Image (spheres, rainbow, N blue to C red):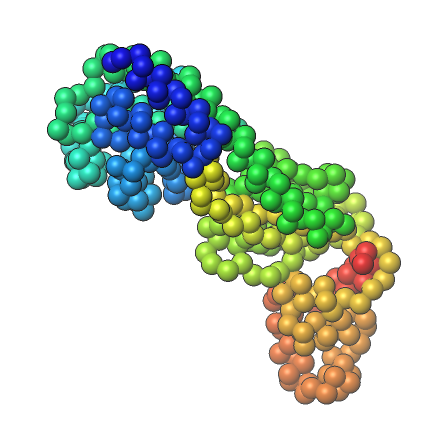
Length: 373
């Protein structure tokens, strides 16, 4: 292989590092230089569906892979299981025998259908302990990769790794900037930024001051000290993350503080993925913002806050009156509704707030009334 071919690939990947729209073309150039059908970039060791990038020649295969075949990617799973480190370059025969390949569905059903005979890959770091496989795919119409092909990819691997690191840094800078813009309207709140897996990416100063008393961050995960509070918090986080299963509920969660200070009000706000090349290359898949407020200042009307917690306007009005000590029958009469309707609203209020007694509702309303405007 001519040195000028490798230099051309190096130029292409560094151009893509700064202009990520060029990554698909760069992968195509890498494929051409190595006599391959195409090239893919796939994250390793993730728990959910994988989002990768592929040269144009493998666009259809990439769609099939993301729609389910990633679950059956035996060679990639073995790379993770065997703890292979960044910098490793080799063919899939490092982790698969010919006998295993002959009976593995990933090879016989998926790769063969897309005209792929063999994969040669370089393992690169993707940041935060993650790995990326840059897989060069050989056509069924060609012979297996030879030692000289592996050597050529090994020479290119450091450049690929550096280019990916530059792109990852650009993506993170853009995502942080966009996420902070979302949070600007909530500057009085603590802000915790989560990635698509629910791991903490950033904690602002206000949130930092509130942690350790009711809310905790350990192992890059956010949790509440109380079991019931944590169950509601994790439910809100799960609903706000990209795989939460649809439109997230507009609902805040109250978290009790062991110190006895005012409760914390936590709202999970979704950050939806942006699926352009800049996001895809580092597999940015959105995430969530946790907006945190301490409920311990001057009194205020609480019906709007109760609506933020998922109550309807009618339920919020009733809850506020009951929380101020009113009797259910009296509150119903004053509000112009029947006693049975008020009882029905009260059951809904208890269910949405995760409580079972009016005394608990009084405590919530008192805490909300102490919230800073």
